[in-house]
Amino acid sequence: MANFMKRNGKWQARVSWRDADGKLHQKSKAGFATKAQAKLYATELESELGKGVDVAADPVFADYFEQWYKTYREPHLAKRTKALYATNIKNVRAYFGNTKIKAITRGSYQRFINKFGKNHAKGTVSSLQSRVRACVKSAIADGIISRDFTYGAKIAYNSNSDNRVEYLSIDELKRLTKVVTDNLSPGNIPAYMILTAIYTGARFGEILALTWDDVDFDDKTLCIDKAFDYHGKRGFIPTKTPSSVRTIRVNTKLLDQLKKIPKTADRIFDINGTPRLDMRVNRVLRSYLEQAGIDKSSFHFHSLRHTHVAYLLSQGVDLYAISKRLGHANMSITSNTYAYFIDEYKRKSDDQIESKLDKI
Image (cartoon, rainbow, N blue to C red; front, top):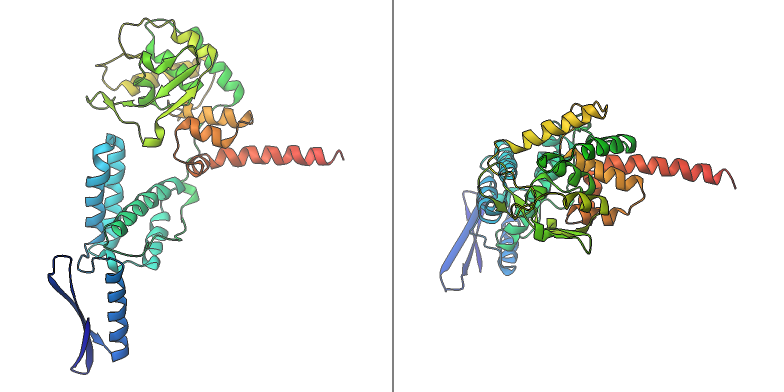
């Protein structure tokens, strides 16, 4: 129930309620110019209570974001992703400071995105927003707030900060594949890993975690259900996201080459104990690029994943099928990540449509 009183020319509203255990709680606010304003505040507060919102709980937003991350995200993430979350938390704290979560509005959140986006690329802003949105949904589920202040927020970003992902043309891809294949030998594990990335688009950690049980030579499939911690010493770890667990079709050329690797361990690419394994494999990749006459200074192992996508798009493979193959949770992630590719092939398709129409 609510009661109102006037003090020093200003109105105060006080709302009282009992929790599930019968304990009495009160929340008040003063300084209203009119009684009508005080009543409106009390009505909104009682409405929140009716929705199950814990009106007494109002943590600092940055604190809640950090606690949510530690509880629901940190235990399941790789070291690199943890570092990204740490940066996100730092960004939120720097902008919002000690602002309580209930005080944040859609407008204040949009202004945060606008400011952050002035110096960051689209992908960076999108990643931050997706994490904040997940946190806000948790706050709603916890009964701390009733409205999603990220709803309808528009991504603002600095287009000059966008780095176009580097990938190979079809001709370059064929040349690299030939060089890699020519260098295959039982002891050259990096070459086999590079070839696997070319044909599957899988991530470095996913490829490193592959075991012989993951390969079905009869059905021509590869099961990707784990990753390998090549930065630390934890061995097998979960995939980047639950949706990254997938089974994909692979081609006969790759399977025939994998059969040539000696089965000396459960893992196909068993090169444990090598310091900075990713750097070693990237050095091998750069040497193969040089042998293939390809000059791309920023091309690295993950660029093979981008190249895989670009090739499939160029061959008319459906975006939904590509998204599933990559292990993305939904097509929007794929389309956002590879918007540049999609736009490029759309332009080619538009040119083709135009030339066809001219023949009518």
